[in-house]
Length: 267
Image (cartoon, rainbow, N blue to C red; front, side):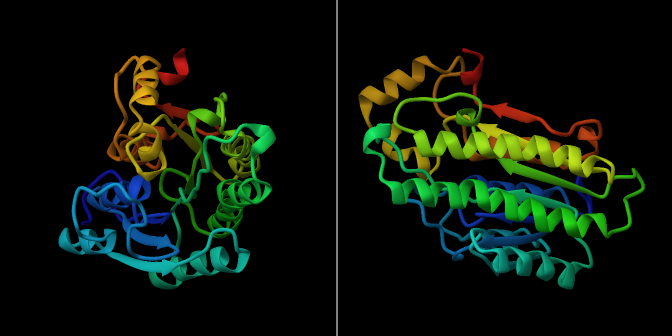
């Protein structure tokens, strides 16, 4: 698997058991990266059936990728630190960190939003990204640069709701706005070491996070009207953007939030 745009780069992808993380792990492997999959379990959690009955790890095995799995709870500092150490122990360095793990609790107006759901959302979606960025950048700073001069690529999963808001998503929107602020500040911190820090802002994408919304006919019709490209995006659409942001094609890109949303955010 050496050929490709990410040939021989070492990549950690959190939340890789399903959805966007799974698609990113497979896309990176096909582009020649060595993969460290991470999640709280190996089996997909989402209700929506994946394109295959195989787990991410089984899929990677089927394409003869070079990969390992490391269990991690991204809200725990010790788990994230151990994840980065495991990647370096196995492959000698860390080139790409995709902070993808996330949760969502929707359809509560702010006055009824359960405090425990708010705390959980911020812990996973914002603190988890902070910890991943912290420990990845610390490792990347210590490494020899690539021939291009770059030492690493950090890609954080924000959302179109990190750029705006919508009813019933107070915690999710707050957490993803936090990811955008974190990404921009970290990009400044890391720039002198030639570490890229960017975010991807998915629109409504066909994963378990949106299945409950999309299955309601009235809500589906409403969302269709809000997307110039009608319908939902696919996890693979986000994976392609993640490949770009980790490649030499993005050599002059840092500190941005890239909407991949079928035009949703241009409204």
